Length: 467
Ligand code: NAD
Image 1 (cartoon, rainbow, N blue to C red):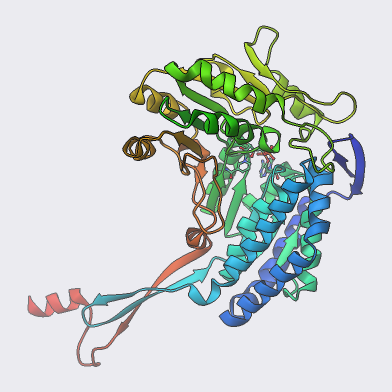
Image 2: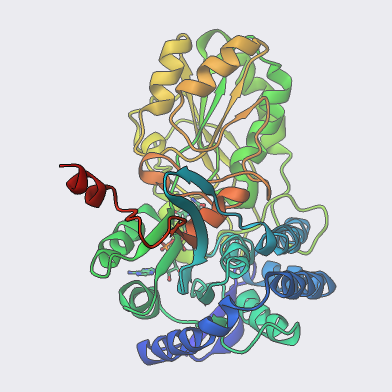
């Protein structure tokens, strides 16, 4: 039996049966059976069905947002924004079925065209930090391209995924196209990775588990996309709008209580502006309101679990250089205060490992080269920001930072219409935007001879004739 908790209170909100490997097999079999029909649904009809699903999600968005906050502890305003993105993502990809264009390639002796075909059954494995949002980034392009799916939510946050399955069915998505299996990563997740009838696994989670997924997928040469961990740098030059950079830096790392793969958890500040930056940042950290997710004034909620809080706290030992500390409620719930460690070096453990909590390392740098060197001195490469008023420098630095997503004078990372994903050990592949569709389709090349029967179109046959 799976006990689902509310992290703000520690109370059980739901008890669920855990799925087994056999349940995963049954879901894969349902998806396999549904695939031939779903892939041949007329593109305009598939589009209409996805639009209807987006509308159905829109109609239930308040219910879904409340459920997400109850299960994750994130502020209700954040959950509303996330569910809005789920709706937008389905609307965006609802336009895709009729736009999955192939190529026509000039060749001699015939016509050559490419088709973009669905893969088959796709297994989707997602984490607990943005439960339904991250699932929608996978489900919407997968369905638009004609695949059927099995979704495995994180054990800690299965509630909105279960609701999604019901909403999809009620919206008319055919039986077997969308299947949700709630169960442990080791059994159900691994089964999706290893099962020969699953053509692709799209995984979002830690780099450690991502490596196991890649390894497991090798046995069946399964396609994989991986969205993994990060240790993104927020690079602040002395010529930047320091007030703006400092006022927004806390939200860029403490948003979602720091449980964000794109968290700017290393702030690199040019030495000459280091002290000014910290002084400007201080009120923004101290004024963060940490507490009840259902209070509209709350900026930050609790961490996801007691176990995760212990891990986060291990990065702030007794002798840690805590420069600024925010507040957090006492008592039940998995609370942890926003914490700024400064000055640190890029060699410190808190600067090297993904903490995934509200703890940030502030590190000085000497000049542009040093900033780039330190920003790239990590196994990760997911997101990041550059703050400067010098446009040429902004582009120079953006080119040289090894990261999949970067913002200049902004801390945003994700938009429905633009590609998102990591370099280095932050992942493989891209989600969102038009690019995601490439990862849910295969390109098939078809050559049609236009020569008469008396002419052989095979180039080697011709050269033999000539020999
Ligand atoms: P996790 O890796 O522990 O779990 C992710 C999912 O994988 C869960 O559903 C889990 O049940 C499943 N799983 C666990 N073991 C498995 C196995 N052996 N085989 C198959 N599936 C298995 O990650 P988490 O703690 O849920 O999430 C936090 C991590 O996710 C952080 O590292 C964060 O950076 C990363 N993340 C990345 C992105 C991104 O887009 N790059 C987005 C959000 C979170």
